[in-house]
Length: 608
Image (cartoon, rainbow, N blue to C red; front, top):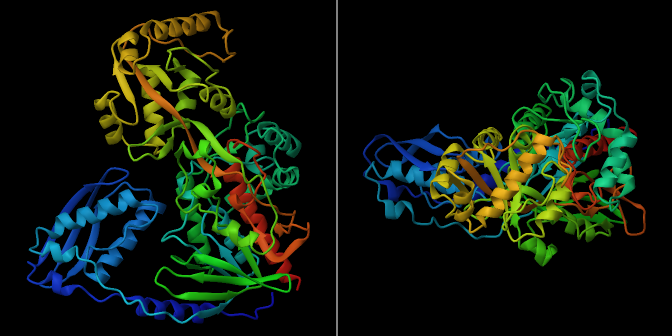
């Protein structure tokens, strides 16, 4: 491949210089008269207890060690690393929380504060903001072959595949850590036509996946994108798990059909989405891919109808102008951008990445890119609303429970209203007719639900204990009672109606057929308590519209022509799912489109 541009030395020097120029004045005067030693502090993080050890000498903090934490490695873990470095640099606790990890950030700062308070530090001074220079920074010019905007799953997959094709790759990430929506996902990945799917004896065809996605999306999908996905997902999955590919570990399993998929085609990675991000990061770094964090792209550089680079601005105020042969937009969707959401969506709990503000979409539209389905937002059932108002899916727990234990969904009237094992779309549509929807379970059902949710990191045992102790008086609503009538009373539901709904469900189990909703029945509800109730809510977490692309992953203009030099991958591309997500499709698309985009760019550069 033509190696006409070198960034390694320049980038290293640039980052060093920018770091030095942005370094804040120290705050050592706040830490004088410390008693040397190591002190411990704890706080409640997002995933549980967070415990730190802070070491000081007579006038400064010398080390911060994390002794205990259960935060998600690719999110909270990365935030802790950044905050620790910031505190040591500034010698102050007046550091900004890491965007997207506010709970973890606040817990970490609180734990460090608790430790420092034992050392004799002037805590008022330690919490005082450190003055930072506001002088304008000079623009730094960089040059590379490929710029990837976004270090989420699709961006990292694109960076890895492009680098494996011989390209020189630079990734811009606006957050302090990699991962985006991928790091928050369960990671279920479609694999139609892959060697893994064949090895477990499942016959599948691209035509079947194509039609399943079109049917689920009510034919509002972009058929060209769906066809591209259906015919390349198998090859992409083979690359994803191959040692000479991405080398990501996936669980040994035989996937089952679902309401959305006629055959089993969805596999799960070890460590969920966070594990995939960690593996892709390690692979990218081993290939020499450069990643600039805290550096959001702001504008595409276009000349004579060709995209030739990106303008970016780091959070420490350094502007960058980066020229490149190709730009791959993998910056995610726009679910966190309320300006692009209608009122009905905004009224629901958001469960997506805070970084999904649609920056890449707006940049592409500004240079003439075409778009589709921008009114389509993914809304899903099986969700609880956390105390801070965020939505949290619990679908793994729901699916595990519906498949083998006694449980039903009822409205606020105590009446069952849907086939609980139906498609997400059918459950969502039915829930929209209720003021409230509740999952009602016997003790065996609840044990399955809770254990699965905890194992899936939907919530922790500590959180569950708190919610159950509140017994319906806080959000999320979790309740427990010895009888169905007592359980119903906790949420002002008619007890006789709930008891009748359970009796009717049990009768269908005894008959072996659910005449009312057609559910494949499993086990009856126990005749004796305790019984449990969890309020189920709708949440939204992804946008389904975005840029239009061609089969080479190039962004298409409003005139129907490819925009030279501009490619896209992941959620920023519109049309795959239509108006609602199909299991494994978004994650599968992130990996497939990233692989396709990186490979396409590398092939183009090699042929120049």
